[in-house]
Length: 347
Image (cartoon, rainbow, N blue to C red):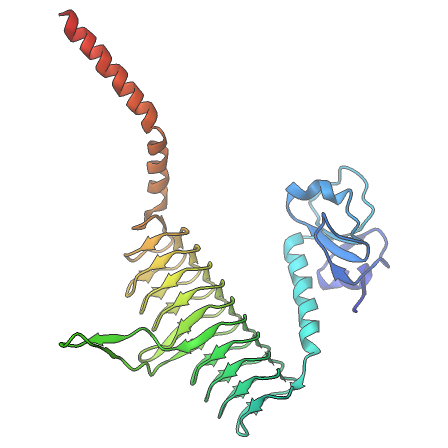
């Protein structure tokens, strides 16, 4: 088990130390549940009360936070507590992954596959012909990597990931368990006799660097050309991305969303959970789609939409505010009707 002191951790996150620099930790814990020997953090003021009672040995805290009472933990003061804690978790995870090396048996690696230095291939994995895997990448047990697939450096494929032939995955990519990359797009041509003839899907999927893809997500290969997931995209679990879709840099998509074929999504777009987006439209840079929205038209740059069919988010809020007033409006109308009726009867 790895152990680090406050003095060792401080330079890693550009922190100043308040308390004992030799205080040591070997694991992480939530501030309300942490035990001695654990590292925690406080970034949300709702949890401030636990700072004064926590058993954590070291707590990461922002420079701007003012203590109301003494604390027993050693403090690491940083510019942004949440980001600093995330950085330490990432470093810890990398150290754990670095210990995984070599090819476990039973597994199959094609004789003409190219496997870089310090690569790990877990048991029951399959690595096809002409596959290239960059150095320090990790292929966990039960993964399938089809022929002519390219995988960059420092990429992690968790258990059960399937990558079909010809697809490309960049460096520093994380793909979680059960995800399928490069399955056929949903393409069928109606025939005069009512049959549906399958349209061959001969393209591929290209995933650029620093992408993270959640568990059981599916990304279909293009009919022709490539389905593109650009640098820095973050995809949640259980997402469907259809053939020839393009997802721009640093876009975030939450769970159970579905993107239909040939839709183009710009940079920095945010798509909420269970949103559905039709094919052949554009979501321009910075667009925002609220959860459970049904998007049937292109969205201009920076615009936020909600509802089914989706429309302008600010207009939707005004409509909601008006709808909450309907009972009162009904009451007032009935009162006016009664007054008018009384006035008519007295004439």
